[in-house]
Length: 281
Length: 292
Image 1: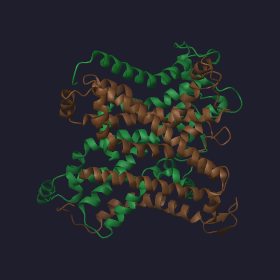
Image 2: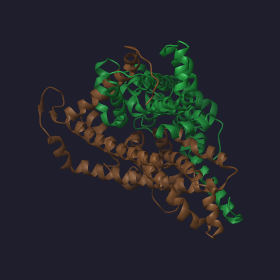
Image 3: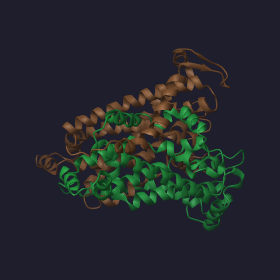
Image 4: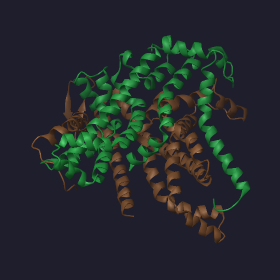
């Protein structure tokens, strides 16, 4: 800080605390609502947690919201986990391999391969929903984990990140490996992979959150409720029929849906910030 | 360009094969299908198709509903970008001044990024629910009768707040990084010359932040345009009337509920054009920044 201005210091802490409160407040209220009975929530929401927490969470995890025709939450949480992990691991794996090929080999059609991958940067799934859906339907991948994850696996950003990083690996390492008689795959496994560890971890955090938070895609490819993910399932619960929404259960679902990615972000804050800045640039 | 490379006849092809295969099947092919379908007219059962040239596009630009959705989307993204960037800038400037507890505040402020847009939508939907929501109750006490089920302006505010709420943390991180990259000596010199904090902000920090702000503007517009489908779908469903039908929502609705394939494909193509333009702007900016 450049100079002393006690009043300004008080003001800035006040603004920051207010900002943090604005972020926490909706979650706090959702949590409070999830610990009361339906009657208590509907007759003016209380501001302090109630006594029904265990029974509400046990109910959504075990049975789901019966009137909404949605499966129990444990199943949706599992589907979300499978989907997020498949997307994350799949993306990292294919990006590592293709970046390695593009940086460490000279082969015909190398540039064509590069541009084919590059162009996907410009085509988010939202702008080609229907034809992509048709392809997945024709391949018989509706209502399957493959249909949920594979179409979202190809992405240029991860490939570019690894390409960028591989370019900074000194040539001497490659030469030394070659002189020692190591083939390309041995070099990849024993030198390049260990060097990429932090990049992989940072990307893992970003991609896990990306995969977990998918909404439109699972909404399209799953009609069988045993493949619902929690982020899309919450909408089915909230818009169930004509009756009053069961807010206490919906909010319990919301809390469970946002907990895993938030825990990941807070636990790996340093990696997350690093990953975010690198992925975007 | 690497000087030292490996030689192998087929290995490189094997290595790029998985990514190229997925890209061709799930990106290039569907995108070209969208282009192709956009010049066809197909009846709802897919029995008959005919080539209609640019008629689908011409029809769109004469359709008041589509034009209305365009205006809605532009207004909506401007409000989301403005609100989330404004709040983030204020918070980042404050956090930058607090040298010691900056990481604590960063921890408190970044996690909403992890909340899915759809979940953020449901949270705010609950807060603003006319019968049980505490925010609606507070507004009511102040004499404002909030009802996003009937009032289009209220519904728009609801999705703007939900979308911006989640995006603030992202903008905050980039603004904070940008502020911390400004050399201390610059601010100190200005302070010695007698410039107060407000003047320093206007004459030093804000101009130096403008590349970051421009980058964020593009990112936020892309976010509002393409990633907030979940917020609209989970809360207002485009209503009341068509007041919150943003373009991505309309593509989805025309394709999967209206079964109007030609029109939906033409809309997809227009959206592709918008993403490509925005991405190109982003890249040019990044290139310039690298030189700089």
